[in-house]
Structure formats: structure tokens, C-alpha cells
Image 1 (tube, rainbow, N blue to C red):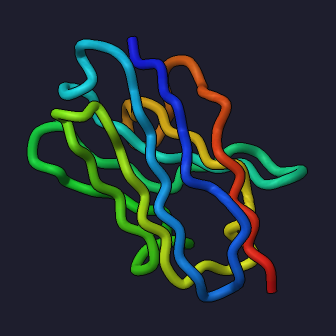
Image 2: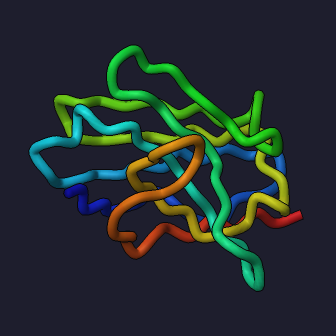
Length: 119
């Protein structure tokens, strides 16, 4: 079981950058594929990015490809999301979680971290 705690969100102008962190407790963290999801106001939660546990293979939603970079540090049980060239449509609460199957989340959700991109 992984219990995520997200941080690093904030208010940023369009074109700016933020780096999110997800500290996940759980002894098996290093064997899980981990990912980031986001939920904008009035919308369903959606997949953003994922990273495998073994060879750091990554997967990105088309909307963030080329702008966001996911990484992980298994020794610190932490997953990161570097977000560059932010757009107002990136405004959302960002969550991390295990990723199973193609892009589905599995397990409990943390409180998330709010990202607001002003135009």
C-alpha cells in the first residue's frame, strides 16, 4: 500500500515552471509504477504522467508531452513532476498514485497539491 503526500503547488504565471513532489510511504514503493493525475474544477480527474519502477520508462498525456517531466528517487520514496511552459489550462489539483494497467490509478488518494496558472 502506498500513501502519497503531494507538495510543491502554487500560483504561477503562464509560461512559468513548478516542480511537484510526492512523498509516498510504504515499503513496496520502489516496485510500483507511479504517476501523476490532476483534477480541474468541474472536471473529472485525468491522467498526466507515469514512470515505471524498473527502467524509468515514462508515459505522458498528450496535453503535457514536451512540457512536463516525471522522475523518481526510490531511495527517498519520492516521485517528482517538473512542469515547464505552464498554461492556464494546467490549473488543477495534482495527485500522485500507483498506476496500473494502461493509465489507471490504484490505491488511496492524498490531499493533492493545488496548481494555479494565471494568464
